[in-house]
Length: 551
Image 1 (cartoon, rainbow, N blue to C red):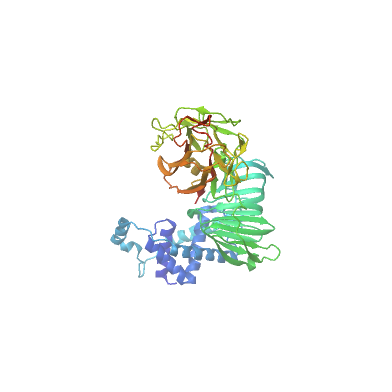
Image 2: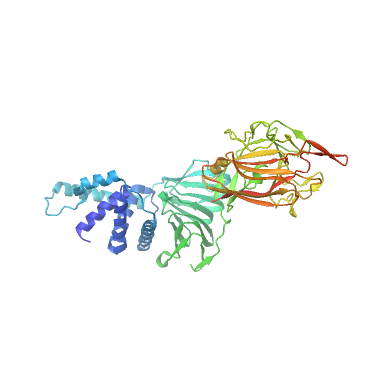
C-alpha cells in the first residue's frame, strides 16, 4: 500500500468515524476494503484503535487479544461492508458537495519533499508512546466503569454479591457473575442495544457492547447504531449485524434469529467455525464437541418485551388479544375473569348483570390504559366516540338500551351457552367479546404502541355473528370505525350463528379503533302471540377471536 493510497484511506476513515463521509466516499472505502486484504487489515487495526480510545478501560479483557479474535473482527467488517453495498442509496447534501468541489485540495495527498520539524516529530513519538501505554494499562488493569443500566424488571430476585437492583441502577464491566434468580430484567447497554433476560440466568457485562451469559436465556434488540453487539457463551460468540435474536445457554447454546442477520462463531478460539445466521433460522452449538446443527426457529422460547407498568411479559405473540383488554388486561392474558365493563359507569363490575337498562349517549372515559371510553348509542344526536371528539356519523337511531355490559368469556346468559357457529365462546380457550346491543367501545392504539415500544400495528381482525342459542328472533347491526371513519358495517343481521369475517388495515397514524353494536331499528316492544318482544331481545352480538395484529 503506497503512501498516496494510505493517505486517501486515512481521510476516508476519519470522515467515516466522524459520520461525515458522503455516500460516494463510503462506497469508495468499501470497494478498497473488498479489493485488498492489506487494506482490510489496515482498516481493522484503525477501527480497533479508535474503539479502544473511545471506550478506554471499559473494553473487555478478552477483546482482540489473539489472531483469532482479530480475524473475527475482519469477518464482521466484511459483513458490514456487504450490508452497506446492499443498502439503498442515500440522498447526499448538495451544499456539502459544493463545498468539497470548492476546496478539492483539502483531500488531495501532497507530493514532493517537505521539511521535517524535529520538535514535532519528537512530540508525536512521545504522544504515540503515551497512547500505547494508556491502551496497555486499560487492558491489563481495567477499572470498573458503568456500561449498562437496568431499564425495567418484573418480579426480579437477584443473587450474589449484589442482591438488589432498582430501575436505573448501573452494571459495570466486571467479570463478577450476576445471577437473576427469579423474574425478568431488561438491561440497556450504553452503546444502544438492549436485552431481556429471563430467570434463572447467570451473566455479566463485558463492555458497553458485549455480554457474557453463562446460563439462561436472553433476547437482544440491536438498533442500527449499535451494530456489532456481541453475546458470548461458553461455546460460542454471536455478533450482531443489525438484528433481533434470542440466545439460550443451557449446556448447549441455541441461537434464534428473528430479524436481520448475525455471525455465529462456534467452538474453541483456536478452532472456531464461522456461520452466517439470518432471519428465520436457528442453530444449536453442542457443548460436548462444538458441532453446529440446524434447528427449528422458536417463536415463543424467549421473552421479547417486558413492561412493569402494565405487567407485560410478551413472548412470541404477534397480536394483542382484545378480549383481554375488555376484562382489564394488557392484551397478553392479564385480564380478570368474570367482570363486566359497565358502559354507563365506565367501570369494571365484579358481577355480570343481565337486566334491561337505558342510558344517554354520552361518551365516558374508562380508567384503563388501553380503552379510551364506552357509550350507549341512540342516534338521536351526534354520537361522540373518542376523547378527541371523533363522531359516529352513520349511527342509526336506537332505543338507547342494553341488557348486559361488555364481557370476555361470558359463560351463560339466561341459562344458555354463548355459542357461535358451533364454538362455545364461554370457554377460556376461545377468545371473544360479548356486546349485547346497544353498546360501543373505543380502544387507544397509541397506548398499545407505547406499551410495545413503538411496535407497528398492522390490522384488526375478528369474526362476528349473533349467538346460536339466543332464544327469540334477533335483529342487530355491527360497526367498526377507525378515528371516526366507518370501515365495516353489517346491518339487520337476523340469522343466528351466521359468521362474517373481517380484516381491517390500521395505519401508523391511526389512533382510535371503535366497535359498536346496535339494535337493528326494532321498536321498543312488539307483541307476538301475546308475548312482548323488546328491541334488543336476543341481540347477543359476539366478536369472536378479536385481535390487533402486529407487524
